[in-house]
Length: 439
Image (cartoon, rainbow, N blue to C red; front, top):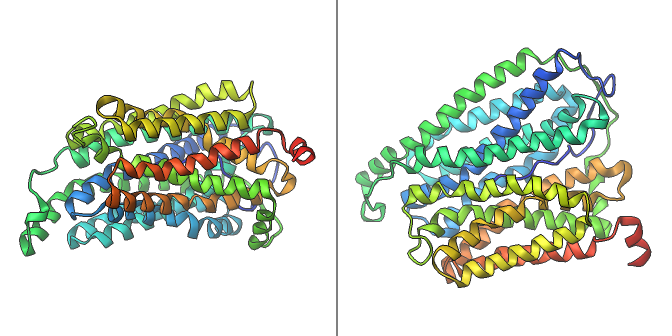
């Protein structure tokens, strides 16, 4: 899954010494290109989980709930690392923190090598957690940094443009990853093997995973080196410290608390659906695809989100964001019901079409939740960053439901998440100041 990235850090830890002109005009294009590359990379690597899950599920003969631990290990990093990452930015600045994040990501990718050698599922989870820790650090850097690299008046357009690179990554990586990770899947049934034969089989089949992530490690190391050479290009001045825990006071505000809960549910629902796509499309009563072909359909889900972002931006400029959020939530619920109750192509493509309607949800929930926070908007965005941990919990619940009642029946779990999002859209359909008068 790849989550939307319209987040700031939990505080505003570093400010440019010259607001609106943080670095020389000649340096800014280079730094912007670097930030766009970061959005592309962490979006793409996150969406690779959707390809990795069916591979590990087959390799280790996992239940759906056990396979979803891939997302739990990954998204737990957001809960644990988001606020400490902001403290690192405060201490050493944006560019050096970006290097820390990239090197941590590199370490996570390299850990797939010993994970494959051990033949143990838990070692893959450890590697994913380290990788996600690096991604979280980089994400905490990237959003406010893109705002600094140019005039304040055009910051929104730069962030939107950067998010397009994030969506591009989530569309491209699963397609390439399917070819590398799923393309060579053996026909051997791992459940029929035991002892040394099983260990040898897992080590051999894991090579496709390690090769993919080792290639990523090399690319990340090169980018980290390039960023390090530019570490002094952005003059930064420390800001006064605020207590991180003070941000949690914002949860006393009903609108913000409801919005933060919906971020938890949205990320969880989006990730849960993305995580089951390959196994779902393989079903004889859906599309009956082989694993490689099913994996190559994952980009339709994430590509829909990329296309929907452009379409949604037109509608959001003309209509109430809350009403559009509610409308999209209703459509997603309908698509989940169609997919869960129908068979064949209709069942498969209605699930993939959800990506198109997911597109505007994260930034819209984010902006509606933070409306009226004023100077505390940055603190609010930190809480929302922590709420991304929904990606660790909802997929696990979906997997447990699939084990108990089947994959189609398990779609009720994300449907409940989107029902709450629909409700929030109705609740927040009026601007904050109007709502406070008419609530």
